[in-house]
Length: 57
Image (cartoon, rainbow, N blue to C red; front, side):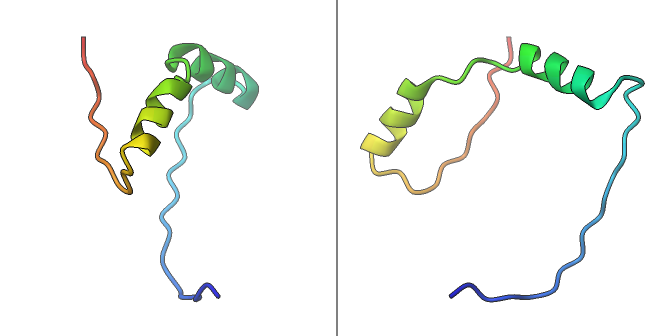
C-alpha cells in the first residue's frame, strides 16, 4: 500500500498569450515524434533508471 505524506507544491503560471488548445497543438508539433524502438531498447537492457540528456543541434 502506498504511503501518504504532505508536501509543498509551487505552482507557476506563465501567460502564453494563446489558448490552452492552441498551446497544446503548438507543443505537439514542436516535440519530436515518439520512437517506440528507443523504449524497447531501454527495456531490453533491463534498465531501471536512466538520465536523459537533450541532443542539441
